[in-house]
Amino acid sequence: MSGSGGWAVAAVAAVTGGYALVSRSPATSFVSAPMVFTVAGVLIGPAGLGLLDLERDSGPVLALAEAALVLVLFTDAATVRSEEFRSGWFLPVRLLVVGLPLTIAGGGLLAWALLPGLTGWEPVLVGLILAPTDASVSKAAVFAPRIPAVVRHGLNAECGLNECLVLPVFAVLLATLPGTPASHQGVTGILRHVLLLSPLLGLVAGGLGGMLLSRSWAAGWVTRDWRPILPLALAAGSGALAAAMGGSPFVAAWVTGFAFAAALRAGPPPGSVPEAGDDTLGPVEHLAALLASLGFLVFGAVLLGPALAHLDPHVIAYAVLSLTAVRALPTALALVGSRLSPATVAYTAWFGSRGLPSIVLGLVVAAEEAPGARAMGTAIAVTVGLGILLHGASSVPLAERYGRWYAAAASRRPSLRESVAGSLPGEHPLPEWRRR
Image 1 (cartoon, rainbow, N blue to C red):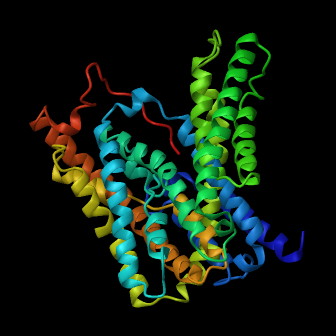
Image 2 (cartoon, one colour):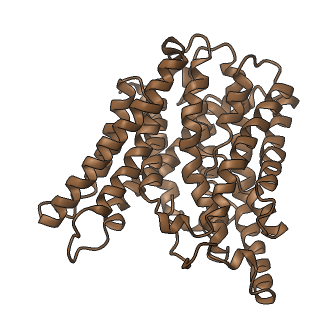
């Protein structure tokens, strides 16, 4: 390890260890974990100490960010359950089917109007990268117990599913940028590898891995300590194999997680051992959370810090409108006729937090040698950075305020739409979704 690399690792370790010592305090304050790690990244990046730089350290930086997203996608998919999705199913379905395409279109039109340096499909690519949401940026607003279950489940389901819907389109648009490795495969080759090869690899790896683990577990062949190693190996292996074969490691990881959990639940019962999901995926989720935090640190160092030196009114206007109008208008249109209260619509529209998916895809674009890579990277970095600040600082107070409103409204109106777990027969309130 070189001298600069050693200092960078030491700085990252110091930030991570320091936050671990005071992690309870930021969780209940105006300061979120993504805010802390992003600011620390700016301080150790080119804008500060210069210990991390995208041009010099692009390999390790991209590897860390992609590994974080692979594990987050795997755990997101592995913890999706149909009975949980039915709790307020109308909210995530409306946000994904109606709101997501409108958000992408709105972000693309806004980039075309405000970012004149972009050409071709580049404005649409910016809008697409900034469309996925991330619950970890405004965790208190999504997972607070006072928030009605319909909203909690709906926002969390949106975060867990919109990434996989965006990834194939991202791969296709990336192939339209001249000079990128994806452009050599062409759109047809990308579609074949991303829409066919990657999901197939995920189905085989996840399905076979889940089946083998369930049988080994039922037979008593696997120890408690080694049981979580298999899903970690499946996520890493399927993603790496997909990348080596020209596919998408992210799509493969998401499908692997979904197939793994389905096969594990369908396998032989493990007897007196606790539920498979709780024990098997717990360590993987903790590792995913750690890598995601480091992803925010890397973002601050190599994307946000340098972007702050290239601020101009157009980029600032784009970031502000992207976080407000581009999210709010599609959300309001998607929820027309849902019978949700205006307060709930506004709450849902505001907490469409951008986070790790946008960061990783933005890093992929910024590392390319395409003509508009720098302009796209700057717009993405400023938008995500501003969102981390605003959503992180507002999540606790707005969750408290919205929770008080809901308690008062539900006491006056027992038939309030937010109080209904869902509209399917036999639905019932369900436990909290896993924390991302």
